[in-house]
Length: 132
Image 1 (tube, rainbow, N blue to C red):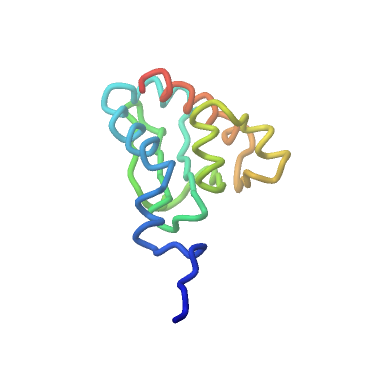
Image 2: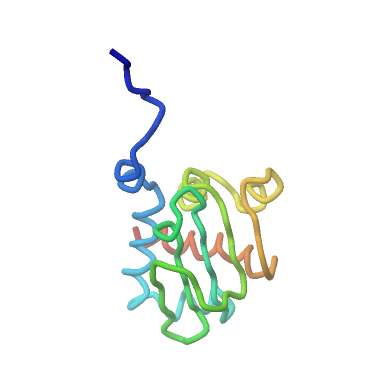
């Protein structure tokens, strides 16, 4: 009998193992209390974070244009900056183990839009980490 490959991962298993999900959840849950702080750090912009290995489920829209801010899973209608990276790299950035500039220079992070705004994501993640 043919033995199934162990290297393939079912989509259901892959979705449940998204390392970035707790960070996305924490950003969304912290916004009611930390919105003004995040908005100040984020420079009044709309951020789209795309974890490339997870499609729409791996996309976070972080709108920091208003004082309260808002965050939701899914794509932004019009983002000022889109940051794309793999799940493990975003998780490492969120934990403070990977610097955004190192990730950019190493080809692990791709930016569409404002480079200046993209670098503020590191500060936002540090604020999230403080409240985890």
